[in-house]
Amino acid sequence: MPLLPLLPPDETASPDPVADVRRRPPGATAARRALVLLPLLLLAVWAALDRRAVQDGAARLAAADPWWLLFGLLFTYLGTVAAACARQGAIPERLPPGLLLASQIAAGAANHVLPASIGAHAVTVRFLLRQGVPLPRATASIGLYSLVRAVAKTPLVLVFVLAAPAAAPPARLLPEGRTLVVAAIGLLLAPAAAVALYVLVRPLRRPALDFVRTALTDARRLHSRPSRFLPLWGGAVAAPLIQAGVVASVGTALGLPLSWPQLLFAFLAASTAAGAVPAPGGIGPLDAALVFTLAGYGAPLPLATATVIGYRVLTVWVPLLPGMLVLSALVQRKQL
Image (tube, rainbow, N blue to C red; front, side, top):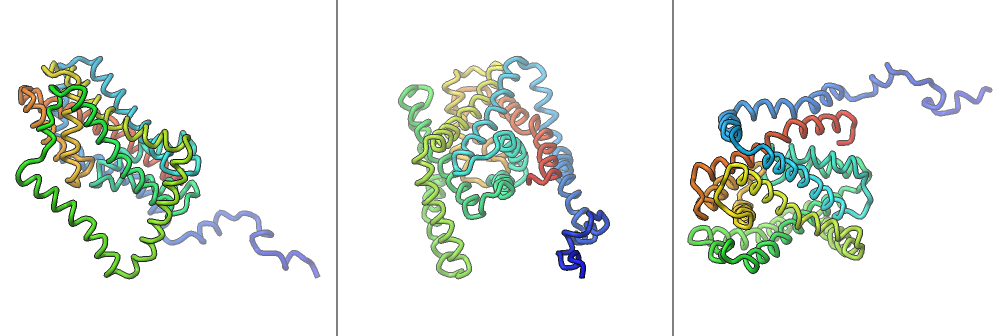
C-alpha cells in the first residue's frame, strides 16, 4: 500500500490558490480592503467637516516665517521618535525599530480620530500582538506608558516654576472654583468606579487580576534594565517638551510677543488642564485652554488663535495624510 495517502492532505497536495480562497472566511478579503481604505475615508470626511479651520490656518500661516514653521514640523516628527522610545521602554521584548516607528506614525493618525488616545493605544496593541507579545503584557505596557507619561509632566512643570517663576507663576497652576470641584470629584470617582466594576462584574475579575499581576511584574523587570527604563522615562519627559516646542516655533514664526519659557509653560499648563476632557487628540479642550493661557500672558487674541491654528496644522493636518497612508500600508502588510 502506498504511503502517500497516510500523510496529511496539506503535505501531499500542491499549493492551490483556489482552495486557499475557499478556506478563507466569507468576506475576509472585502473586510481587509475596507480596513485599508477606511483611514483615508475618515481623513476625507474630517477634512470636509473642518475645512474652515484648515483654510483659516493656511491663510494665517502663509505670512509666517517659513523656517520657524519647518522647525516646528521637525519637532512634530521628533515627538513620534519620543513616543516610539517610550513604547519600547514599556515592553520587555525588543521590537523592530523601523516597524515600531512606523506604528507610532500610524498611531498618531489614529489618535486624532478616537478620543482619549484610544486610537493610538489600539494601533499599538495590535502591533504588539502581531510581534508576538501576549495580550496581557501588551495591555500592561499601555497602562505603564500612560502612567509614566502623566507622571513625567509633573517634574517639568516644577522645573519651570522654580527656574523661571516670572514665566510660570505658581498661581496659574491652581484650579479655581468649578474646575477644582470637578477635578476632586474625578479623583474620587475613578478608583470607586474601578472597585465597583471589580466587585459587581464577576467576569472582569480574572482579567483584571491578570492585568495587575502582569503590569507589576513587568514594571519591576523594566526598571531593573537601563535599556528599558531610560527610553521609557526619557521619551515620556521629552514628548511634552517637544510638543511645546511646536507651539513655541509657531508663535515665533508669527511674531508672538512671548518668550520661549512662557510659550513652553503655556502649553504644559494648557495640556495638563485639558487632559481630563476625552477628545480626539485633545482637539477642542486643548485649543481653548491654550488660547486663553497665551492671552493671559498678554498675547493679542488674534495672534494667540493663529498660533493654536498653526500648532494644529503642523501636528494634525500635515502629518495626518502620511500617517493614514502608513496605517493603511501596515494593515495591508498584516503588521496591524
